[in-house]
Length: 297
Image (cartoon, rainbow, N blue to C red; front, side, top):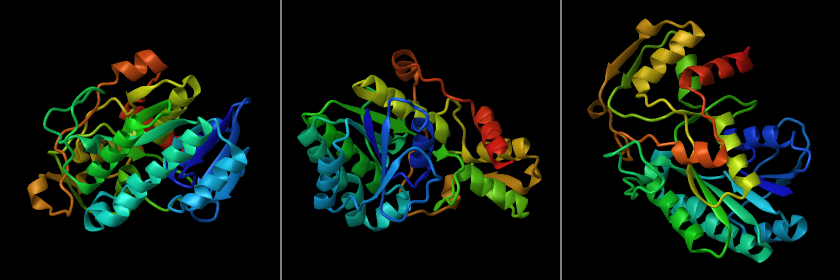
């Protein structure tokens, strides 16, 4: 199977490359906008700007992938709110181009989506619950989902939440690494206690996406961690696992902070479908932290 990974330089992309490189029957292709930042492995890297449809179509003509896992996206929620045109370009227009390329080659497409398509009033959510996004980011990801649903493709959607992990030469941090570094530097952290998420280990998300792709499992699947936590609790657990000073962490509520994009107060996912249909096995947050700790050491 020829598999194409978009956003291959990012956290999910690199975990997918690492996972699929060990699959004997996979011919692996990776794309990114910049130079390759992925460790050496059993893959071919293509430097492609996905907003250039001609370049994207040319790549498909050249490699003719059987499956695509589309992990590339504009995921900075506040940046999306402040630049909705760029958000639309990266998260909707690119997906529409990718759908056309996949339709031309009967390519199975797996799209990575988000809990931010929900308003957070009734979480945790099942795959069938009705979306109601609060932000430009959430609206863009829902539009991408809808474009895929309307296509003629065989497709899958992997919805996920607050992904964390570690890779070499990362261009962005995540909540766990940011918390760890802040506490190591002795910085006091005041974190909110009134927004709840299910933090997702990047390796788990990569495995979920691969299970969907390998099985050509059609439809929407929730792929997240299994513990519903707020940022204050996340920081305390991170401090405990890494042996850092938890007294630096204090709690407050979201009213003390102003952010451009509105956040859903309580998301989280019901994981029964992905566990039963795909055989997905999420890590607990403590298990994920221990894996990350071992990788860093």
